[in-house]
Length: 248
Image (cartoon, rainbow, N blue to C red; front, side, top):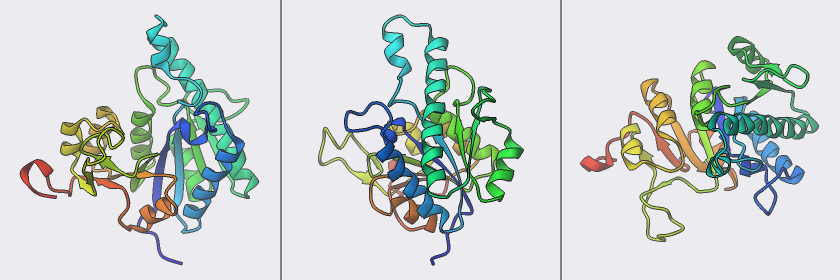
């Protein structure tokens, strides 16, 4: 079996990854499909932590449009991420993978509180750690939570798994001729205001030299290719030349 390039990765999944055809709710079939992809990565002896979004259950901006208090809307989103974490953990457990769900907001009856050293120990023992509850604070996205947790657990790579196969110069759904980038610097990604990850998360990764790969989770073998160091999606890192100065 091919040797993985990365020892420990954090996988950021949107809530929609677990949704059914309507884009809402939790589909057990989809949870199984995502779990199988995680198992394939673990088979390369890669330690995996996961942070999930909540868009399949609740989007805080929908509440804000109706006058909801921002903190309340965000707290509801944190709870929704825990539901997703439990669903994915169940799917992995049924495939024989030992998991631990940890939450930034304590709810000891169903999950461990997030403790950095405990999470690292679980990873060292081969368990998949699924972290719910975002950062535990309102006004921060789950992208930022993913960047923060990746640095806390000393991950070698942050994988942003989406439904598009990388970062484009424009929205490829609106412009079929939009250019897809194989490599970007952090500054380029920030200057472009890429829609796949918020600026706070990008800045955290830039400040700590944590590489990011943006990829299509549904493209066969994409996660495995990423951990093996093969070209897939878009790599965002400090080592890539600026597209604005002609470098790539």
